[in-house]
Each structure stands twice: as C-alpha cells, then as structure tokens.
Length: 118
Image 1 (tube, rainbow, N blue to C red):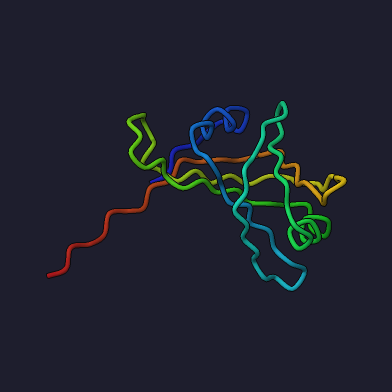
Image 2 (cartoon, rainbow, N blue to C red; image 1 turned 30 degrees about the vertical axis):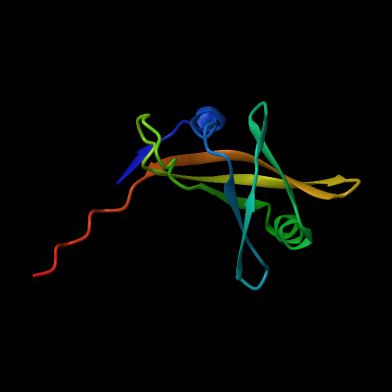
C-alpha cells in the first residue's frame, strides 16, 4: 500500500527518522546502497557520500532515497517506509563529496499483508 507524499514536504515527513539510504545505479546497472544522514537545504536533500555513490550520480543524475519505518513511533505513517526518487548532482567537499537530491516523487509505503498459510 502506498500513499503519495508531496515532494516539497519530504524533509518534514522524514525529520524524525535518524538516517536513510541512498540508492544509486552504476553504468553497468548495478545498484549501490549506502546508509546516510540527510540534511535539508530548501527543496534539496544533501548527504555526504563516498566515491562510488558520487561516480554513479555523476553518470546518470538520478537517485532513490529510502527511510525505514520509525520503530516505536506513534505518529501516523511511522510504520511505513518512505521511498523517494529524485534528480541528483554531486557537490565536491574538502573531505570527499556530497550528493544533492531534488525529489520529484515520494510515497509512504507499507507491504501488502502476507497471505495466511493453510
């Protein structure tokens, strides 16, 4: 089950979640996943990353972001995963690189309940 999140409200939607995952894809089509802490800068989410994530984004300009459920939270949708897609760029830093993601779609997602075995 998915519920749409306005991408402009994504930073607020994930503000109580301590970390998320950045998913990028290599030119060969291999997914790369990295746990990161995002910082909101206006309509952009920014995270420090390593060379592989930066190289992947430099090639295709896209990223998927994922935040796991907020365990023990009592707010609506705390039991949902947040998934967002966005346009991404690389920003150089003295100590490496950051990925800057402008989300264009986002959802609260909860798995379909499993079928009970007979």
